[in-house]
Length: 91
Image 1 (cartoon, rainbow, N blue to C red):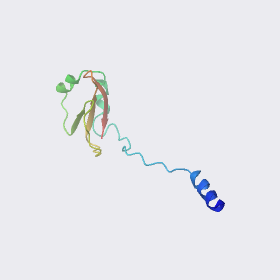
Image 2: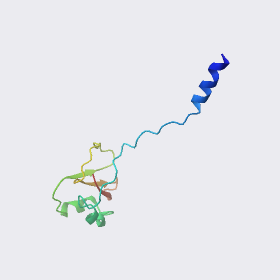
Image 3: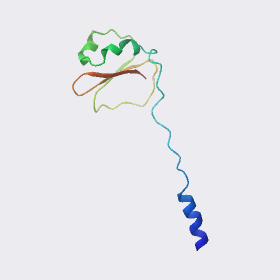
Image 4: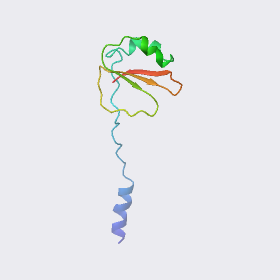
């Protein structure tokens, strides 16, 4: 019986492998035009109505569901509960 306890104790001390990070690696901020629009951070969400953005755009508000697909050409705008732009990034 004591020969069974030692392997169990050693197995309990083994390092646990960390799961991979499900988030994609950050994209080049210039790939979708996010870098050029960083001045919009802190502006009201209505400022996006005056921006001409050709290409894919995604606007994310608190509680919105978002797919985990990664599209380098897509520009993402995160809007907070106060309807202000808080983050602009590609993906």
